[in-house]
Image (cartoon, rainbow, N blue to C red; front, side):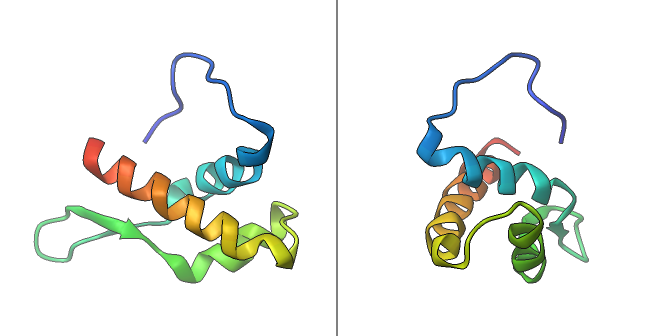
Length: 77
């Protein structure tokens, strides 16, 4: 996946979620038989959230937002 070729506006309340989603760009699973992308590797998410500076209290909200973005991305892929 590559970065968009245009700027997008991100509301402040979604900034950490977007940052975490972008940092997870290398954490996509591929099916063994067909190579199709099936979703993100959630085991990497806590590490990414810590490095992104997400407070532990916000982990659930950021995780939910990442899942929403993941589903949207899978529809596009």
